[in-house]
Image 1 (cartoon, one colour):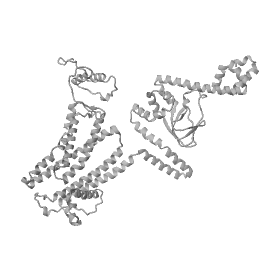
Image 2 (cartoon, helix red, strand yellow):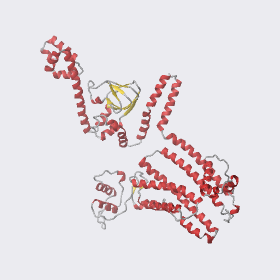
Image 3 (tube, helix red, strand yellow):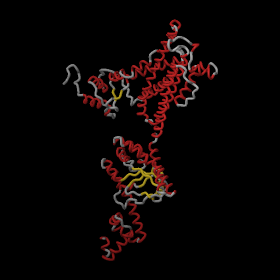
Image 4 (cartoon, helix red, strand yellow):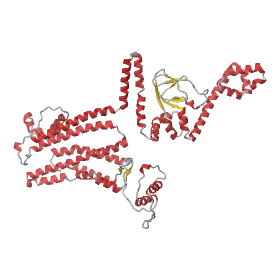
Length: 590
């Protein structure tokens, strides 16, 4: 029913989506996954792009799957998050709030954080029920951000450093309690570390565009976790020593002359210059040394806790680092084993072959030959893994991937180059790889063979990468086909295309079937002309007069007989028998 207030009659949601898609993308391909149901106002507003008056303008929505600028920005934010993960704990533990280079560097990071918060309102979010689709509605995007990361992002840009510097100037008035408040408030800077969990979402975006290895990512993740854990433990351990000499834990009364921490105990036990125990960098290096030997379970015992709080912290750090180290070692072994799964299967096959050779007492020469064959046949193992992966894809996607992999080989065959890409997609999916040992005979009836690796010999020709034979598989007359077998001179890897598969493919495409029929007739004409010329030459060498007579009086029959399998001498014998039995007049009839 039409609305009386609206100048445009309302349309059903599905019709609005399809109509808008047709009007906007008449000359450009569109994915059905990007079609979304929109409201009446959005529909009529977007229809204005086709030339009608613009009713309402909105800020554009960025598609995270198709924006290289957003990828660059994500890379910048990721680098900032990594820097903050190491810089914020160090500043909180060892440095005092001052207007210095660190202060202005932190302000630059805050500006990047603010820009990133604004961008979150204009980045499309994934549809929960359809992961491949995106939501581009401003209200839903804003609500998703407000109920998610907004609180953490907002707390990470609070002016904590500015407040600490302002409070530091009042410390002379408020005394030690004001200084204590500054140190407690500075702990809020560590809220920024919660933004590190966004790296998982950014890594997911990168994997869609770049496709890096998950095993390699796992190794980087484990190494980064160990480094970050060591750094945080060092900051916690060193911060306790740096601030423990200023305040007592119970009543925050300055008792610097009576302070007793692991740092003072280390200074009294080992000695050395005072700057080694006063400089933040030196204290951090000692703390990092303690963190690494604690994480790796070495524990030399030269740095030990001295207060009850240090004992509690040391116990917590030891238990957490031990669990993390055990997990990192186990997960690293799994990641290394899964980086090349086909190589693992190849090693298992080689071990199985060695066991079989040992049990059956196979001679050393044959054992060496079998191992060599498995080494050269490694490509088949990789193809099996590829087939298992491609089995999870749709037929069209699987065919396009096969076409991309084998396109360079199919372009070597002259009549396959004439076929359209849509046919070659199916052809590529029916190419079968095979490996042959040196000296092995290669013969498959009505099969096109394309060389991938190695050297073969066919009819005195040496074939290498990109060469092919068996292109006459299109011919149904076996007398016109070349039935000579090939022989592998080295370990040879070839691609096979069977005639039955090609026939089933072209049956789906009438235009390609007609084109292939013309190619078949062309090849047949060439082979027939060559066979007739050879038979005619043979007949001329035996009996020139009979050769001339047959070509004048029985040329068509001579051609048909040659293409039926008779040679030049067979025609001479048949012609002689006919003249003896029935005379010259019956020779033409024969």
